[in-house]
Length: 172
Image 1 (cartoon, rainbow, N blue to C red):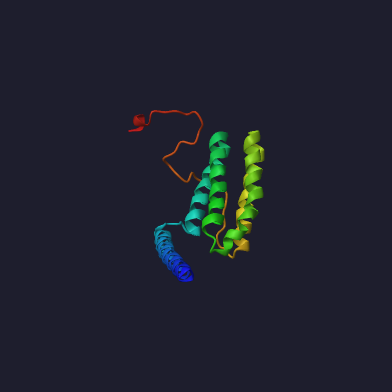
Image 2 (image 1 turned 90 degrees about the vertical axis):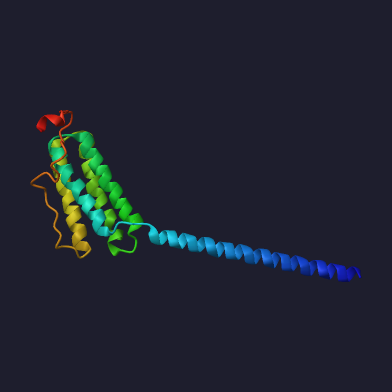
């Protein structure tokens, strides 16, 4: 009788743990499905969107450097670096992402020139950065996309000069 009681207890424990395991397994499957559904709904910019952002910062950077607006030039450089990091983080399915590190020396050179507040050094570093962009385009079979030193401001609704606080209402 004692053995019969032990056998029934063991079977009950096995059935209970199996039932709990099945419930946990079902819950895990449901949670994984919810995660998968959410992943499909998240918008991640493509490589082109990231590159357009970088191009805007690159162009603005030139004029900010020429104007020796070093705080804004630093900001644009930091934004470019962050966007390149985002490419490596979010666009992992594109082979171009692995070439991003080749841009870092150019960005570092610009950052150093900005920190030194040296216009001639900035101009040379900007050319180095621009050449790094083109070398990356070449290495990734995008040689048809040639980046140059901009000839005009990329935006007309931003005043790039440091400390030139004006009342925008006066222009109307």
